[in-house]
Amino acid sequence: MATKKNKISKEAIVSMYMNYTLEHNEKPKSVYLFSKLNEFTETEFYNFFGNLESIEKEIYNVFLEKTIELLNKDANYESYDMKSKLLSFYFTFFELLTANRSYVSMNLKEGKNQLKTLMLLSGLRTNFKKFIGDITTDEFRIQQEKIQEYQEKAIQESAWIQFLFTLKFWLEDGSQNFEKTDVYIEKSVKLSFELINIAPINSLIDFGKFIIKEKTQKN
Image (cartoon, rainbow, N blue to C red; front, side, top):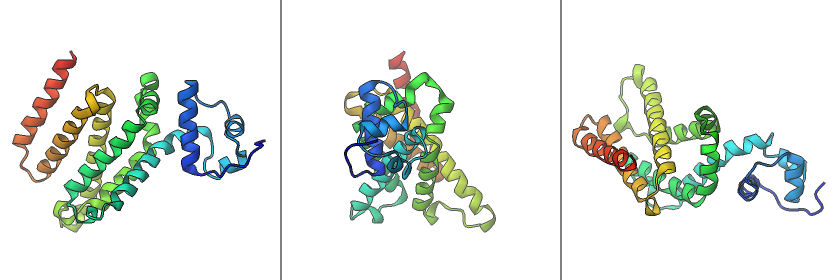
């Protein structure tokens, strides 16, 4: 049992878990040992998480929650159009990921198991799609009631796929300050909105050239 009483929170447990994993190059063996090491009780742990595995999923939700919190602190954010809100989200979210890149890279590249990676991101997927739904404006909705629900789901799913491609690009990005990821974000978001507006050709060509150039340089 813990010998010292620490004030505990979901965010604190997440931070402790990430630090332990990086410092020991392995995950904690049990809730008991993890709690004892960090001087809080198992009961306190179970107030926030059901097991150690659930922390890994929650880590990415914490990044998303912090991103939205930071966006809402900007007095001008609510006046942004949908495209600007999405760009702001991407740049803020990936700035947080970059600050925790060592853990994220270790966690998502572990074993290169794509199914496991998707499972780790399942909670993030749900909340990301909710975010997309919240910022989707009538400008991007078809007004016919019968297909409106289908269109909402299509927008959210396509946005999630775009996010996964961006995450993969960031994980493989070796440029200074991850400048190429910034370019990727700008071009991919621009393309997605022009596709919605049925004016994609110039951006599609531009984005295609960027991807081909990256692939050529890596090979």
